[in-house]
Image (cartoon, one colour):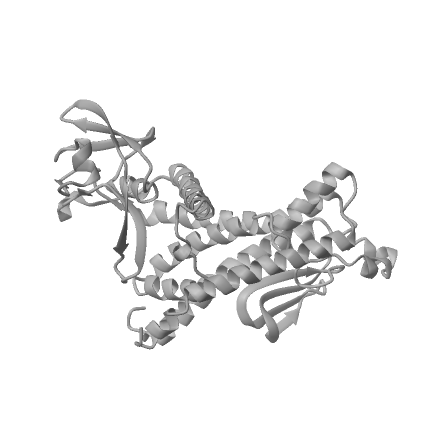
Length: 378
């Protein structure tokens, strides 16, 4: 992949990653809807004018559209691509048609159809991670302290060269990367390190300091660091493979880590502890996709898993227009014993649209310099 020019690699990688994630998300909605007896009018990858499509034997139009920034499954009685229900359309239907309408299904079935999209995203990520852990393995090295940064958090806390970190806040540490992941996401938060010092077990408290670093592609990241270095030789690195059952458990754990890290960051932004400059939109995804693709197809597949978890999580946020907003309406319906009025739902969808548009504007502003960098200007 690294032989492709940047202006070709980035769009191709972006389209691959986003198309896979969107297709699986919408497929989750589609399959459960079919299972519940709901007639699906349209299965669309992308928005806008259709590039090409076909009708299946059930009357569903499968289409690929020009704007590849999402997708939708439109049911028989939907008013629009956001799955806003149309009771007027329902009333105009014959009894036979109403039997295949989304609104006529029990509350549990409707909730299952909506939740199926995000769940499909989580399952995709777990599958990718599990297959990777089983057949490719993970390149690991022992969590040993080889060198301390002078006056760093670890040095001040009392770490010494040769220490082996076996746990952090009760979490078992098996590889140096495990320690890095926890520390990087815990800036300004005191951690308790369980340390093996020549057979003597110690508990050392240290607070990672927030620092801006650059990754291998030059992207600026603000992470927590404690000033520990691992100078492992080539012989000290090994690919560790896992059996299917253990790999599945690790895949679930990896997906949970992404969810927890994302929610932790968003909470930090809302509580003003974190800067919002790490948030990005389609341009950021395209940029990262191209960078990761240059490392090889396996790296791109793993990015697909990470993005799939993120998309699944975001869609569960209780914002009208997203799946989580629909589930919020169903929860209210379960409590009230009847659905919200069409007017209330319409107002909710408008508020949700405003929130989504504001986020789109903000992330686009955050990503404004990315196209210039692609052109060699920035």
